[in-house]
Image (cartoon, rainbow, N blue to C red):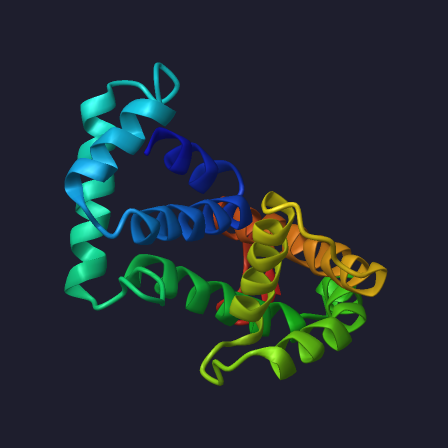
Length: 186
């Protein structure tokens, strides 16, 4: 929980990927409260503050996942809303002439996004969610020790660069340094 709060404040991309992982951990534990408690006790010793708060946070997320029928797939409503907001910001940034670097990186990334979308069964995903799902998939493969092709690795690097710039712009927008409502910067 404390890691999530810190990531949310510092880097929105890392926060989303972290929350994807938390969702998958809850799924892997079959949403079982005792298994969640055991997992937290074994993995968050003195790193996340008071352990009971972390256990309660995980169980609250699990309850929300059950309530929203997300125990097999999908993302928490707060994460979905954040992905939608990032996509809206992305669309607005593309319309801003002063964001030419952002646009250039996006168009350089677009072939990788198109390739990922062609591999996805989820036609409801926006481009930003597709990028996050691609990065998360790569990280999952890496954690399992599986190899990826050089082409895939290059695509992932490009998508990572793009998401890093989007995360930076998001931070600037939240700080009030960039105004996107009418596509102008402050």
